Length: 436
Image (cartoon, rainbow, N blue to C red; front, side, top):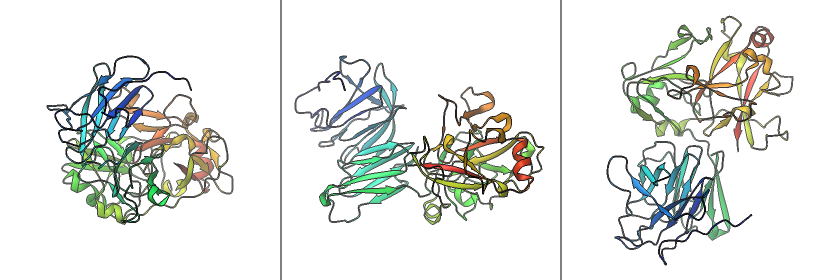
C-alpha cells in the first residue's frame, strides 16, 4: 500500500474520521461530535478519493422537495456509522432524535444528496448494506433488515440478540456479506461473533405505473396472489393484473400468456408478468412470509472447480416437469424463470444436469440454447435496450452476470434441447447457484 493523503477535519474535538467508507470513487467520513446549532449533533463529509489533496467538501442533504437532513438535536451524533455503495446509496447511523438516514448522492461536483428514508436512531449501532439490503444495528438490542424502498416503520426482518442480558454492545459492529446472504454481528462481551443466514421470504419489489414487470417469489407459499398482493396493490383486475405462461405455447407472443385468477398460487423460481395502474412498492405480508417454506438446496456438484468458491448451494428446477405440456414449435422456446433466492444470483454459475450424466456449465451446453445463446434476458424498461430486454451473460467478459432477488428472466432453448430431452422424456434440470 502507498500512502496517498490525509484529509483533515473541520474542527478539533469533532472526532472527524470516527466512521469512514468508500465505494472506490467517493470517500465519506463523519464527525459525530460536531457542534452546530446543537451540541454533538454530528456532520458527514464527502471527498473524491481520485483527487487527493482537494479541499474537504460538505454534503448538503436535500430532501428532493424542500428542507434539509439536519442533525437537529443534542447528542444525535449523525454519522456514528456509515455505509456507501458503488451506486452512491449512503446510510448514516445516528442516535435518538432525528434518527438514521438513507440518502442517494445526486451530485459529486457540488456535493448533494436526496434523502430516501428516515429511520429510527441506531443508538450508536453500525449500518451495513449489500445487494439491495440494508442492516441497521441498535446497540444492545437488535438488527433490522430493510429491502429497497421499504417503509422504515416496518422492517422486513428483525433479529434480536441471543441473550437479552449478556451483550450490551450487540450490533455496534455488523456486516452483510457481499452476496447479501450472511449477516455478522459482534458479541464481544462473551467473546463471540454471531452469524445469521438470510433465508426468509420477505423481499417485495417496486412497480411503475402501467409498465409490465417480470417477477417471482423467493419462497414457497400456499397463499394465492390475491392474498399476497391485494394489501399493497388494491383490487385485482381493477388496479393490477398478473399473467403466467400457459404451459403449452412458449413462443413468447401474446397468446403464450394466460391471465391468472386471484386464487392461483405462484411457484418459487418461475417467472410471472405483473402490471399496476400506479407507481407502487409491494412487500409480502408478514404472516405469509413467516409461514412460507424454502425449496431445499443441494451441495454444489461442481464444488472445487474454478470460479465456484462463492457458491453456497444449488437449487434444482425440474425442466422436464415444467415443460411437460409444451406444444411450441421447436425453434426459440422462451421459458420464464425467476431468481429463487433472497439475494442476487450469478447466472454464469448456473448448471445444467440430466442424470446420470454429470452437471455441466452453461458454456458446456451452449448448443441447447437457441443460436447457442446461453444468456438470460431480464426485462428493463426505459433503458434504451433492444426490445426492452437486457442480456445477462453466462460467459461474456464485461457483461452483467447477476439477476436481482425476485427478478424474472427469459431463457431461450433450442430445437436440440427439445428433441434431446423433452421428446425423449429424459430428466433435465437447471441448478441455480446461491452465493455465499
